[in-house]
Image (tube, rainbow, N blue to C red; front, side, top):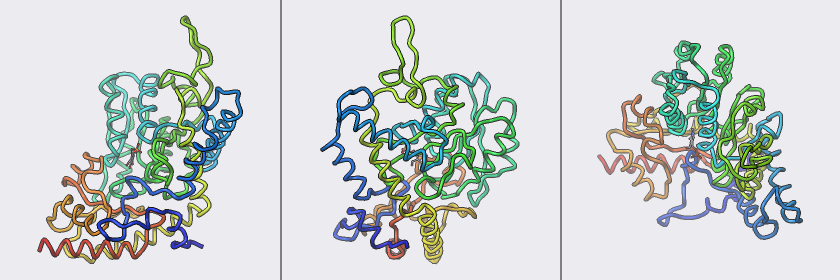
Length: 405
Ligand code: PLP
C-alpha cells in the first residue's frame, strides 16, 4: 500500500522548516529531494569502494566498475531497453540532447534538412538544435498546440517532408503538465521513415516508461529529477542509431586504440563516454530507480494523479485563478497566475510561508509567447506530496491574493 507517512520519512529534508514554517516542497519539476538510500549510497561508495573504473586491475577498481556497470543494467531494466549497449551515461537531459543534436546533425543531416520540435519544449530541446541550425544550415519546424495545451496532431502530420530528418519532443511538458501522445507521435514519424527523440525529463519520475513498447529511437532523462543525484543522466538510443552516430567527445574510455596516425573507437556505449564517468552518481541513480520501482511506478502515477485532480479542483476555487495547461492527459504540474499579481511576487510571498514553488518562464520562453504571458507560478508534485501540502498552498495563495486586494 502507498503509505505516504512512511514514504516521507525516507526523505529527511521534508522534515525541515524554512522561516519557522514546515517546508512545503512543490518544486519537483526543477529537482526532486533524495531518499536516504541515495544519499547514503554516495557516502558509502566514497568511504569504502572509491577507485576509478574500467582501467584498474586492483580490487577497488574492479568493485567500483562492477557497481557502475550493474547500475547500467538497473537503468536498462527500468526503461526496458534491449541491451546495456543502448544505455549511455551523460550529465543529464541537456547533455543527452546536445549529444544527439551534435552527432546526428553531423552525420545524418545536410543544409536545408529539418527537425520537428513542439511549441512546448524546454530550451534544452530548442537551443541544442538551434546551435546545429546555425552550424549546418538546418531548420526547426514547430508543432503547434491548442489552448488546453494539447499538440495539434493534424498540424504535426503536415510538417513532414522529405527534408524531415528527426522529431524531438517532450513526453511531459514541464510547464503545462501535458502528457503528449508520444506513441502516436512516434508511429507517425516512423511511417515517414523518421526517427524520434523523446525528452523524458518530466516523465521518468512519474510514469512507467518502456522504450521498446514506445519504439522510441532515443529517450533521455536526468537523474536528479527522479530522486537521484545531480550530475548524472541517461541517453537511451537504439543500437542501430548509436552505431551510426560518430563520437561526441574525445578522451579516455571512448577509444580502442590511439596512435598519431589513426585512432579507433570503443564499442557501445563507451564510444560516447569520454573521460572518467560519474560512477558514484550512477550507483546512486540505480538506488533511486530501485527505490521508485519498489514503490511501483503505477502506484506513484495513481497517487500523483489523484493528488493532481484534488489540487486542480481546490485551486480553481480561488477567485481570479488562471491555470495554464488543461490537457485531458496531464501530470502533476500546475502553472498558474492569480488576477494581475506578478508571478514573482506570488512566488516570493509563498516562500515566506514555507512554500517552495517556481516562478518565471521555466526555460520555455517560446511557450510563454504562445500563451501571451511572461511567466507563471508553477507547483509541481512529487511522490511524497500530500493533500495537506496542497491545502497549505491554497491557503497561501488566498492569503497573498488578499494582500493584493
Ligand atoms: N527537458 C525538460 C522537459 C525539463 O523539464 C528539463 C529541466 O527542467 C530539462 C529538459 C533539462 O534538464 P537538465 O537541466 O536536468 O538537463
